[in-house]
Length: 119
Image 1 (tube, rainbow, N blue to C red):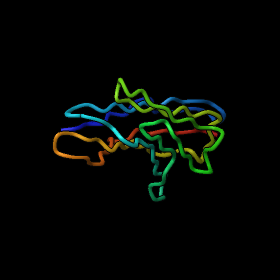
Image 2: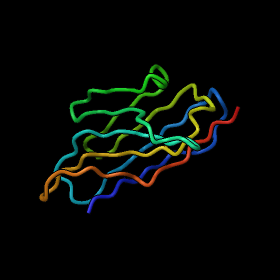
Image 3: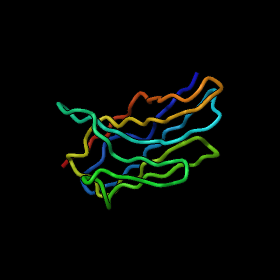
Image 4: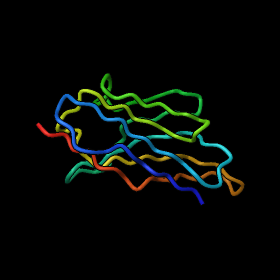
């Protein structure tokens, strides 16, 4: 079994910063792409940022220049540094990871962490 556990969410004022973490544990041979998604109130889940095992990154246009995704492969952890936060960044943030084990590769999701940005 593989688990992804997110942490670091909370309440912050507009212009502030938060750092989210997502740690994978369980039966892991390797982790391919990892990513962050978010779902705001009344909205569909949307991509925020992704990072490959080699460190290549991709971002939604709405967060470019403000958010930075990184990973520590030794710790099976992905991070999302969020700066210059805006009220429209308020959402539940989910991480995902393509985890490869003895049984093959599969996409796993975390349980989500709430980020609330007040104006």
